[in-house]
Length: 431
Ligand SMILES: Cc1cc2nc3c(=O)[nH]c(=O)nc-3n(C[C@H](O)[C@H](O)[C@H](O)COP(=O)(O)OP(=O)(O)OC[C@H]3O[C@@H](n4cnc5c(N)ncnc54)[C@H](O)[C@@H]3O)c2cc1C
Image 1 (tube, rainbow, N blue to C red):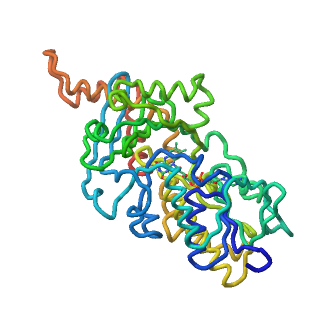
Image 2 (image 1 turned 30 degrees about the vertical axis):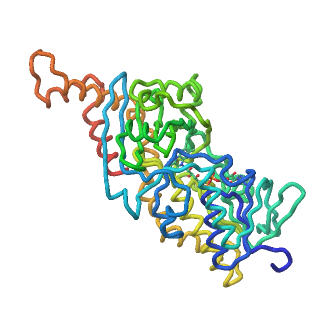
Image 3 (image 1 turned 120 degrees about the vertical axis):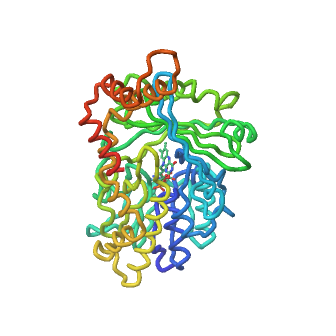
């Protein structure tokens, strides 16, 4: 390494940072991966499922080596309201065999493994170091400062997660507003694997993912989740931070209520809480994306706001991995021309477009606006669960045809047909 200067310093050994370090190290570059935790993943959390496609491109058949828990073969979306629930179940046995669609996993194990892949490829990993600031020269980032230490690089990759300190220090981003982020809270509930199999009706090591909308958030914008691991289930809530601010209720109370909901409690009965964690998740998509490259700096993963919540699909890990790869490819390209200026790093946008990150965020750019519609979290769960309860009730009273039942329930819900149509249209075309 010439003059103790790295080609890249990557800050944050989450999926974005470790992937960037891995791809750079494989290409033979000197890369330093810095993580503030004692080990990668020590404090990282997420709901529970990695969509495989992005990592499979970088580490083919990664599931053979990676610490994954279960391939997800069943997706369930459940509306909850006032003691009633309606579920949509999707089972696809194609997801059992390679190439698997998605896996549940634990971040502590997975992040440590991915960082070790980067190390094996030649990256230098330094843990228990919190980066405090960027080093600047003539308006260009030339390295980082951590306590008394200064380290230099051609380029710094900020993969330090949501509300990135480094993107803010570089003048590329501001603090996210409460409307743009959600607070996630999660418990890991330990249960024997045969109990999980029975309760979730799974065969072998297959897994299930279940998302909930309605009572679990007390009608606030957000939802609940349950993912099956080998010997535990991950259960939690994600609630828009702005909504949470307005309520008197704590996240702790909300998650305890969720666990006691009669539709959830039987799934957890006898389980012990093994872990409790909370974290922010970017929710505003393209609207909160900072400038993702500057003089000598690239921003990847949650630090760049690359995450998507469609209600039925929550993605962040695959965006983090793909943007880490795109950042690494950009550095490799810039090194060839020895140009780490804004212009030299502008390839980043091209790679982000080619590999789906910007394409998908653009395709779903109106999803965050759709999710702000409060009817989704109270009125519609009420309408649909009460209608379905009525449809399946036989009471000996005067028969009413389905169409009349629907109209009467819609009237009771006080949603005009026009609003219903507009919401339906937006849901179908924006999500
Ligand atoms: C409740 C919840 C549920 C979610 N569910 C899912 C899901 O099921 N599927 C999915 O795909 N996504 C999910 N996500 C989103 C996903 O977790 C993120 O998109 C993903 O973790 C982003 O990865 P990252 O590498 O960009 O950032 P992070 O995973 O946040 O990693 C950032 C790393 O940087 C380190 N760091 C931060 N600051 C510094 C510093 N100054 N110096 C050194 N190191 C630093 C941190 O310790 C951390 O290791 C969920 C998120 C939450 C909160």
